[in-house]
Length: 313
Image 1 (cartoon, rainbow, N blue to C red):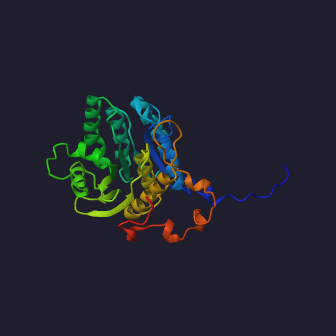
Image 2: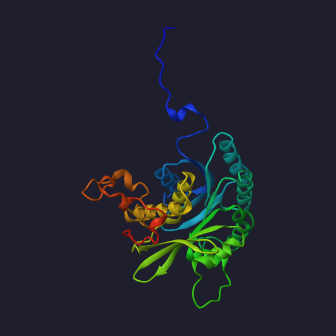
Image 3: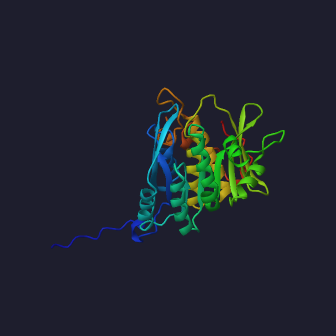
């Protein structure tokens, strides 16, 4: 055969197992409306420059208005998907969304235990659409199996309070440290609590440990009702942690990213609005609105910027 010139090998392909992008494994259900679930995880994490290993744990029967049903996969199918990929690809973080059954939680807990050095971001969505007994059984399994493996728990204030502080009798709602303390009882070191009602039509989010509030952010309340915001935030946070950002910086950037997704959100059907997680890919180029037109202080935040009161929403 004739000699052929050597073709340079891309740097990212020279060392198998050392990817140029951080790799994240996500356990979540497929959402056929595209509002949340795995589609939210994949687009949000890709936006944060992570490679996603999506493990399907079940499927929603839903539209953009409401969840009608959920069908969980068998736990062996979930475990087989994950372990096959993990034997091939080193990962930097796990994200766990709604996985549909205590059996799936058990399978996932077994996997994360085997990779104890890898951080776990867990997101707890609102489960009020589900059967009451199913909710109780699932949440009990989360407490026993998932929370001891969790590095950061993400959830709406009302959702986490109903779950972790069901007997709260105070004259005021629990604050972020009190929610974080309740999570820490089950082994969670950090909790990102969203959706605190604040004065002047603002919502607040707080990253807290049992000892202190590490960061706070305030955003203007949107008039629209969104589906998929929590999956978007937790996915972005997980991807940024996987990329090597410290927790406070990752939280700042993830919250700002969510704010931009909601600001660019749209209504694809007759129900709720959906975050535009790829808003950056189709900027209209008008003066002052595209990424190239913004100053670094408009688009980049770090831990020193807390409290974050600088974004539009």
